[in-house]
Length: 135
Image 1 (cartoon, rainbow, N blue to C red):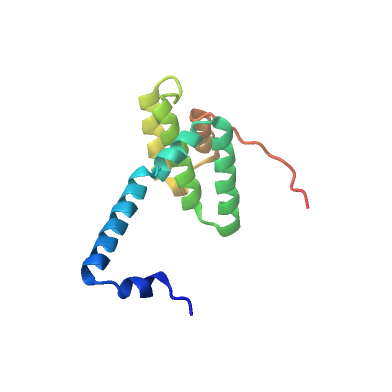
Image 2: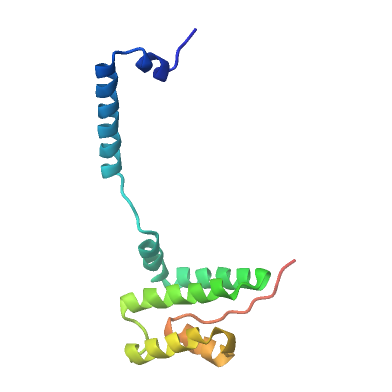
């Protein structure tokens, strides 16, 4: 009958088991140190700096908001896009004023007007594109 590795290790003398455990931990640390670790938010913001990706990201967020009524996801997507654009320093001609105005508008989520939404979208380089729904 074949034994599993843990059964075999359990039959070894204590000193030998300890050395095996120690070496296993060293190998695990080596693997973890060599593995590239990505910060999700940094990676997302890098991808959102691409206008095509950003517009699709926002479209998906809006589609989900229309399905489940959760506006927070849409506003989070807008915030993420705005942050990505800020990192690129491409918010309109006066970045500080645009940024302040956008932050004020996003704080007033319930009173966000179509005009304000269009201002925010224009500031981050995105437009609205309407298409017929295909069944």
